[in-house]
Figure (cartoon, rainbow, N blue to C red):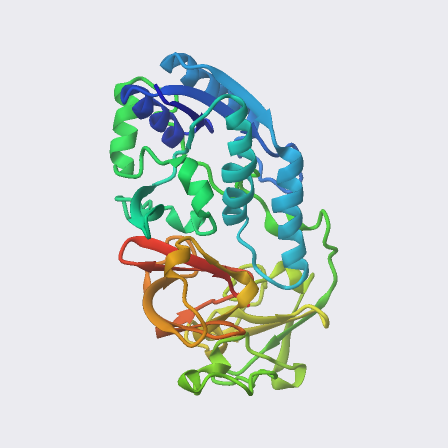
Amino acid sequence: MQKVVVGLSGGVDSSVAAYLLKEQGYDVTALFMINWHDTRGTLSGDCPWHDDLVFARLVAKKLGIPFHTTDLSEPYRKRVVDYMFSEYERGRTPNPDVLCNREIKFDMFIMEALKLGAEFVATGHYCRKDQIPVNGRVTYRLLAGNDLNKDQSYFLCQLNQQQLARAMFPVGAIDKTRVREIASEMGLPTAEKKDSQGICFVGKVDLPLFLQQKLQSLRGDIIEIPGGFYRRLPGLDHVPEKIQGYENFCRPFDYRPDDGIKTGAHNGAWFYTVGQRKGMNIGGKKEPLFVVATDIEKNIVYAGQGHSHRGLNRKGLFIRSEDIHWIRPDRQLHAGQQEDYLVRIRYRQPLQKARLYMEESGLYIIFENDQRGIAAGQFAAWYQDDELLGSGVID
């Protein structure tokens, strides 16, 4: 009998994952991760980890499976939270959930599970995995969940073959409604529990307040930029001939204070991200204001009116060579190659048609349609049909 350690989080998805594995004949053990102790910046009413722990214990007891806990808060702070602070300080927009999966759930957690004798580790993610032979070796594929409204493959876009080899996703082939039904039918304590929201293991936060743990408030100007204006970004003179004409739209737009007019003030440019609407507190405009760029060195936030503002919509993006990751190394593009894929730059975004151009310096992604709110630090993930092939950090 194969032993599987389930990351039992105290939510309904991992609870049903544990139940399904037990029904399938696996030797199932539950392991609960404690990853965050600090409550500064968290919103009142959000369920703290100790409540999740109570639910997880109750589920394990109901299923009759062994239950263990592990405190991974120190590596979580170093590998995820410190990275998040560092990225915001640079004016970038990180995705801590992607990092949490790569660095904690499918790294540190797997090592803890192996200490318990695990052969596999299971989570409640809505995605699927299969395997195919490639050059005589087993290659694992990461596939979208069958419930496309809940598909969480994007959050796993930085996993590698070694991590996938140990992973199991028991709920990936069923939809959320059925998961709730199973939990109810089995009388699991989490059947009616609301899904968690916010930063992985931290919960819902007031982001500026949370970031103020390390980033200071500092008064600065909000400059409004006219709708169709953009400036050529320096350093893009040597671009591949095949993407010329799009090169200005593959990097963040470059604005200067005299490109627009002062229209308000803010408390720190590092608290803002491209596409953001809330937090500027400026009224009286014909259309709502959105952040179109930030200048961290000068502490300036640039804003523009309306969804169609040029600074809010870009045709492409660029990923540096060192920031490109292939889940399927056998599908890796090499310099001079190009391929059409489906791409998303944020969770729940519908997949977008795009062409990937690989060069020595990195990867250019040119979309069929302009994309709104592309921000440096986000992860772009590319798919072929329902398989996630690779990802990278947007420059």
